[in-house]
Image 1 (cartoon, helix red, strand yellow):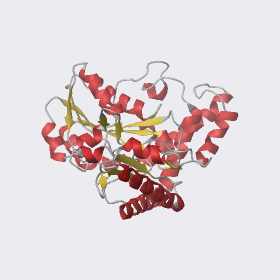
Image 2 (image 1 turned 90 degrees about the vertical axis):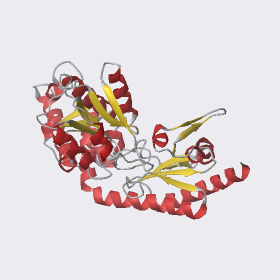
Image 3 (image 1 turned 135 degrees about the horizontal axis):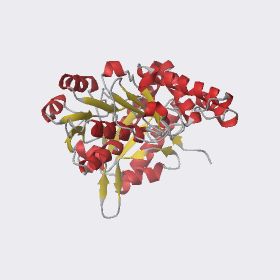
Image 4 (image 1 turned 60 degrees about the horizontal axis):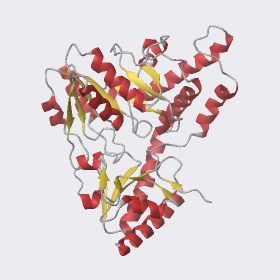
Length: 381
């Protein structure tokens, strides 16, 4: 059986062949503990140093400002909880947006049960946070603002530089979840002006289960893991050397090929959008038309159900739904709800996301398959 065309790169990415080769010695030969002082610890320790430098180069920060984590979820948890508890004596108010990933929203809801107050900012119909709303939400008790760099569902890129300027002016720590943006658009922490930034390995062609958190020096946050004191005593536990090596290599590739990859993903995304627009009348784009990740295409098919479209195309196309439809109910994603996408559109929302490996031939075939499925379902509705 021929594998379906993969258009779900925002969910996860394949391993880059260069990443696999970089990791191979640490699967086959270099098994030592990087904390060991003997010969077997030398290569793993050097590998960690190199990976930290590779990540720092992508983010434009100092290597010592990077700590390794188990992924984007842990990075977000560490950043938000770490600041909340370290700065509790200064205040208990956190500002975030309604369209954050659950790895941010659920952390904030958890903190509310511990006496913190959270403001969940609305977004406009294009999924954008209004900077004036951030300004208005700040109180004397605000200790943290956390707003994602780019949304995982619709791809809208938030005004991080403007928000960070406000945060800096008020002495408030600012964190951004860059899991979806790293490797797709520039994630220069100096240009963005953020204090903390989260990345996830499996979103940029590295393995699942590894990530990193940038913490601007000299900012101090609470420990996430207690133990032997690895990662400058911020996150204990023997480092996952093989996967960290993979993440480092992936970040090196992301920086090296960023312009080329951005152009390719954008070309593939827009070819798909144009092709579907030519063949399907009832079609709506979700997210900002320009300020959007170059690979992300959220489309709504009016009057149809997303799960029915996926059933029709599932053997040929891999994509994601923006709504889960059941016999007696429809569960629309919190992102589409926050953007106030009308229900007749929202229930038929699919997210297509292109990647480095996406080809012109795949896009042409995807247009054919999706158009055929939508027309068939429309006729039977």
